[in-house]
Structures are given as structure tokens and as C-alpha cells.
Image (cartoon, rainbow, N blue to C red; front, side, top):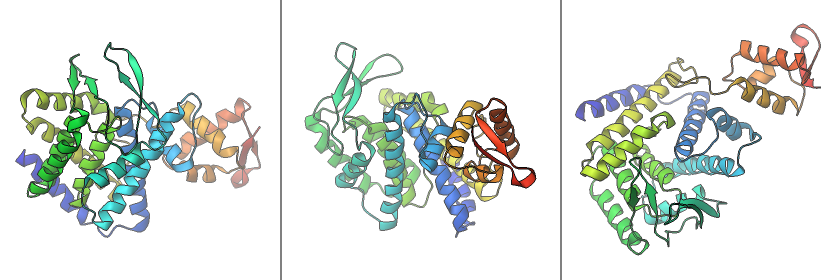
Length: 338
């Protein structure tokens, strides 16, 4: 544990050497982290949007056919909650029950129901009260197939008061350990009808950010290991494996930040495929060009993470199949909807 914490602090010192960040680089960094964090945290909870769809919805407001509007609402709300965290850090606000309820209200804004397992194992729709503690019991089906029950509604307020008292009395802990343990203890209570996992990750990251660290973005690809680490702690009461998991994910986020700061970033995490497949790229191209005719340079400015040769190939194909028209010659070529 000490070794990985030491590595985190070492990487953080490297990141801090780049401060103050160039404004354009700062914007790129924040947009990237906001999109990754929103995509991964929502995907862990079952949101169907791809990374590419999340990026372009947050940047351009573009939606895709066949995706539930609920999934776009979750992306919008989560991104706004992240923006709220940055304000909380700047204003140096204390972590309180009121603040937690504020963030939950942002996450669940516009949501009226959540799907949950009923007593007979059938999925039912339960009403949701954004920013309010649960008034009905909740539970989850674990990876091992067992039902895990959370704190009863009558005990939630007392449990949350104890959690916050514990947090304020343990600030001498390293922020990584403190944030991870707060996450675990919060999830054990599950104080709200819905959004508890997303909110637990937001609160863990608030603790990190208030201490000068970046957010720990738990990757969807590591969802099973994440849940296994939580369940292992439930069974044994030993928190080391979960804290270590969080530390590993924070290291991964720090490495991504360093790649962006040093110009080595490809726009992808290690081992990932392109965030957009051809179908997604072409759908976005048609959406963008439907608003106005554009040159390839103008298109690329709107889709910066798609390489120019790929864009050129996609545009040529759309012209061939009759979805787009090509007008002009040389540098004056523009594309428009057929």
C-alpha cells in the first residue's frame, strides 16, 4: 500500500511541475476528464451511451437514434455535477449532509423512477426523490448471486451523521485512503433511492480534489474488479484491497493527465479501441454538416480526436453512397447534405 501511495505522490509532483497550466491545455484536460468520468461512472451503472456518444453529446448536444433519453439525461446531469464539484473546491466548502443532498439533486434532476429488484426478484419501478434520503428499503444482487441489504431508511440520517463525523476526524489519513474509505462506507449506507454509486465516486473524488489530487476515474473495463473489491470488503471487513484498487485507478488517471500535458496523448486509454466506430463517425458527420456546408478543416475542428485521413475517407464514402455532396476544387472543397 505504501509503495503505490508513494508512486501517486511522485506522479502528482510531476503533474504539479506543469502548473500553472496553459489555458487551452487546461480546457483540453478538463473536457477530457469530464467526458471520461461521465462515461465510465454512468456505464458502470448500466448507461448505454458509448464513450464517443458521450463526448459528442457533452460537446455538441448531439444525440443518437435508439438510445434512451434517460441515458442522455444522466450524462448531462453527471457532467453538471462535476462542474459543481469544481465550484465546491474553489469555494472551499465543507463536506456536509446538505452538500451531499445538493449533489444528489443535480445527479437525479428530471428522474422520477428507478428500476429495482422487487421482493420476488422481478424488476419494478420505484419513485425517486432527488436530493432526499430514501423512504423505502433498498438492496442489490451481488456478483455471487446473493441479496445484499443496505441501511434501513429509519437509520439513514444517523448513519450519515456518523459517516461525516468519522470523515472529519480522520483527515490525517492520506487523501487516497480517506476518499476510498468514505466511498465504501457511503455505499454501505446507500442513503438514496438511486444514484448512490455515482454519488459515492463523486464524493470520493471531491475528497481527492480538495487535497490537490485529480479525480480517480474508475474505468468501465474494470467494473467487475471494482465490484469484487467492494464485495471482498463486505465479507472480510478488510479494506486494503478496495483502497489498493482505488489507488491503481488514480494512478491510471494521473498517467493520462501526464500524457496530455506532455503532448503524448492519443485520446485513448491504454488498450482501448477508437472511441468512435465508422457508423458513429458518419452519423456525427451528417449531423454536423446538416447545419451548414463545411470544408474538411472545419469538420476536423468539430471532431478533433478523429484523424484527418479517417475523416477524409468517411466523407468520400458518404459522397459515394449519396448521403453528401462535394462542391468546389482544391482547398475550396466543401461538403453539404444531398
